[in-house]
Length: 218
Ligand code: AMP
Image (cartoon, rainbow, N blue to C red; front, side):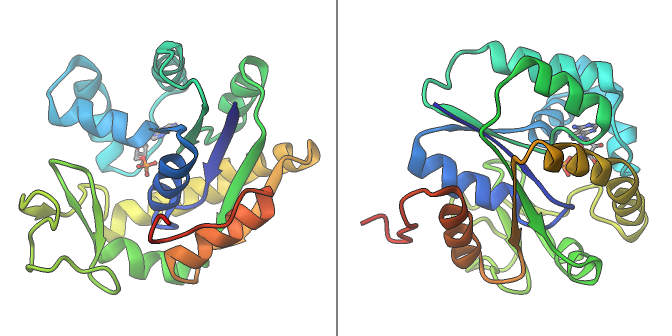
């Protein structure tokens, strides 16, 4: 059983790296942001509560976040473990998490703010299957269309200059202190997120002592 947390500012590749790791290790990828986006798209009660907060790039209240995480983790579909992305984001969430679950490692994707802006403002996402594209280095084959299902690609509502500025500030103010807390417990592996996704994945695996990444799956 492996339990990981992946952290990093918006656009640092948390979703991509989590998916690569999850597919290979047979662990479940849990993205709190994806759970909220699903709720917004499907007009649920939770969606109505979080929509404006998310669009503004602010953090959703801790009680709601913790209940979403707890509910998700009580679905015991993670026999081999999980990788959780986008949580915890502040000290209270971190304390709740550490009290409730034994974590093997926190993976931190490190990326300078200038590179984040470039990536986030060029990000497009498939509303149907959730695949992320980047107009800089992972454009879809047909402009504006998902390679996998053909759905029209969209820009995330919070991938704007204004919301990004809020999210970066929140990350530095609230999430960085969480890293200090984890670092004291020696859980943290920090990875340079600037290289191409395959190399970042390889670095993560080396640092976690996992078998090497094989992009072609062989
Ligand atoms: P993400 O996809 O991880 O960038 O999350 C998108 C948005 O969902 C964030 O900007 C927040 O509004 C909300 N969100 C996701 N995870 C959390 C969390 N752990 N605490 C508070 N808000 C969150």
